[in-house]
Image 1 (cartoon, rainbow, N blue to C red):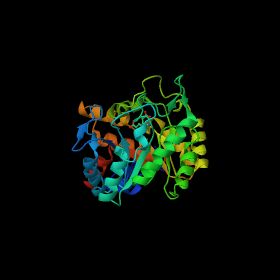
Image 2 (image 1 turned 90 degrees about the vertical axis):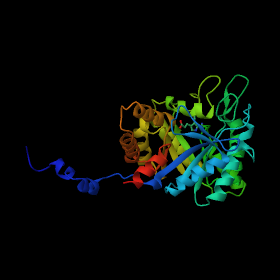
Image 3 (image 1 turned 90 degrees about the horizontal axis):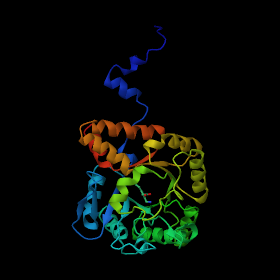
Amino acid sequence: MNNFYRGRRLRQSPAIRRLVRETRLSVDSFVYPLFVVPGTGIKEAILSMPGQYRWSVDCVVDECRRAADLGIPAVLLFGIPEVKDAVGSEASSPDGTVQRACAAIKKALPELCIITDVCLCEYTDHGHCGLPDENQYIQNDATLERLAQTAISHVRAGADIIAPSDMMDGRVQYIRQALDGAGYIDTPIMSYSAKYASAFYGPFRDAAGSTPQFGDRRTYQMDPANRREALREVLADISEGADIVMVKPALPYLDIIRDVRESCNLPIAAYQVSGEYSMIKAAAEKGWIDEPRAVIETLTSIKRAGADIIISYYALDVAGWMGEG
Ligand code: PBG
């Protein structure tokens, strides 16, 4: 046993461990995702995501207030429409659920940052993120205009940041130009840049009723086996004008978060997706793991990998636990 290095010296007390801790979670990093539905007085449990709900506009304002009171700086809104159709008409409707939620939240909580997910899959009857042709091929360029219209309708309603999650090519540039053209030159785009075709979106699709009715999303979302491709996607989005880039899901892609951290200087967001949430929930409900510890450990690893911003359904719980020390 040599006495030059003895790692245990710095692990001997909670105070020393705190002093030398390299990664710290802060409520400032968290974004809380919320599902908004038509109607009033609705707080409907999402069975595949225990502890998460579908909220009507009036109720989502109260939930946002809880988030703001806990110090969470931002929410991410997903809308579920009254009716779904082939082109996802309600996505860009001025009185769609997300648009009404933006207006109501902005009015009640002007300081809270509202991020909106821009995509068509929650709004289309076929459940795809883009518009299919008669051969069920998802058309890239025909989709861009619908995304741009949707983005503008969100900003007009009060959204502070636009988050396109569709994975069509060239959408960041298209949306940037559309926003600039509409006078919204200061509205940032947080792009879902490296979005993998993941099994971990299962509970979300249940929550949003957005499971594809034919095929899957592998023609536009990324192959989980690919690493260099993530950098191509990220660099393309940056060159198109993205202000924040995202890696999604988070835990199975920590190496990608690290790669992105080392190849760009933009803020990086990582999305701890529905399946990551529900997996911890389910194991905790069975008494197989300690939920707060498992959550803090995974979120810390996401931060350690290089993320600045963490989108998590656990945001409120974590903020509560941190408040309790
Ligand atoms: C919409 C979208 C999805 C998620 C975020 N935006 C679903 C998907 O791509 O199927 C997933 C989020 C989650 O699982 O928590 N395109």
